[in-house]
Length: 94
Image (cartoon, rainbow, N blue to C red; front, side):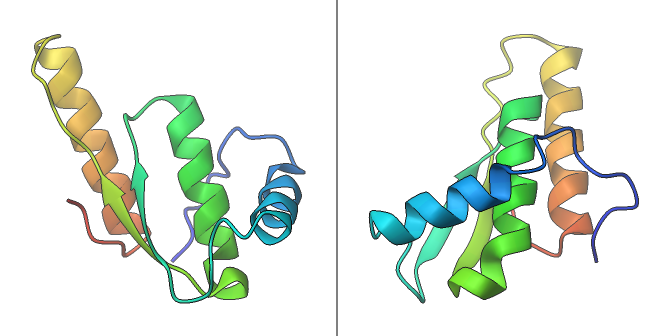
């Protein structure tokens, strides 16, 4: 299931990722890819872009997140956000 709200990334990010992955052999078909997601806009945009490309690239995605608990409630909020995203995208959270 794709979220109703589109993430705030550049429209051609997916094209750039696809081009570079193929050109440099970065994501071979069948690769298991752990996407490190902090909860910030950059890692969330990468997660959404890779999720959109997963079938075309033939990759298996999982979400990685580690709460260092250095920022109190803010860190906990990031963890909840990442957990919700992984659930929305039906991806395992490690």
